[in-house]
Image 1 (cartoon, rainbow, N blue to C red):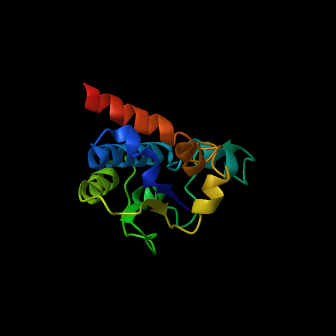
Image 2 (cartoon, rainbow, N blue to C red):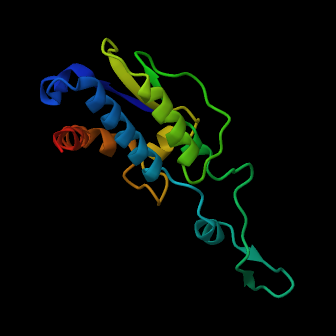
Length: 163
C-alpha cells in the first residue's frame, strides 16, 4: 500500500519556502498514517478466540493473539522514499510508532528541490486488507483518507511559515 504526491501542485502556495513546506507536509502525513494504523487489540481476540473449558462448558475470558502476531509490526513498517516506492518490509516492531516517525523525519529532512515524488508506503502482506477496512480500529483504512486530507496538511504547513 502506498501513495505518491505530485509535489509541483503546491509550490506556488509555499511562497518560496517549498522545501520547508514539503518536509512539514510529509512529516505530518506520515505521523497521521502511523497514528491511524491499527495495533492488535486483545479484546477483539477474546471475542474471536474464546477459550472454553470442556469439563465445565464455561467460556474463559483469557484469549490469545492469533498465531504469529506481533503487535506493532504494521506501524513499524511505514517507510519514506523519494522518487520511487520502497520495496520490501523492514524488521521493525513499533507499537507506539515513535521510532518509525523519527526515522521518517530523518529521511524527509533530506528532501531537496528536484525530487519528483515522496512515497509513504507500507509493504507488509496484509496492508491492503487493513486499508480496505479489515481492522475494526481502522474501518476506513489509513492511506486513502490521509491522502484525501493532503491540502489540509499543505495549508497548515504554509500557515506555520507565516507565524
